[in-house]
Length: 56
Image (tube, rainbow, N blue to C red; front, side, top):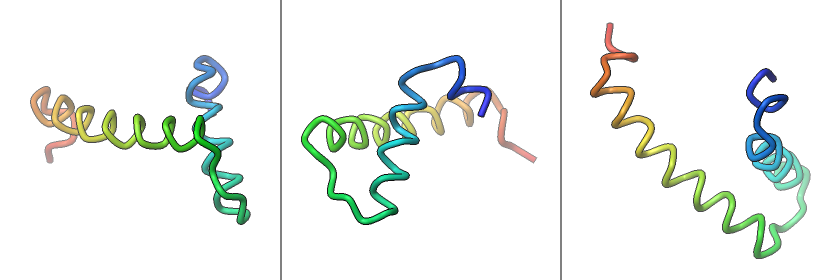
């Protein structure tokens, strides 16, 4: 919730996911947003691993 309040992009992504979950097909802009978020997730996982954030 906090990230969605501070970053409009997070809110847009969450909204696209919500609408997708409710059966709406993504338009081109939402599809690009989800694709970009997918790539960003992979990069963020690598960065978090390199920083030791998710290691236990």
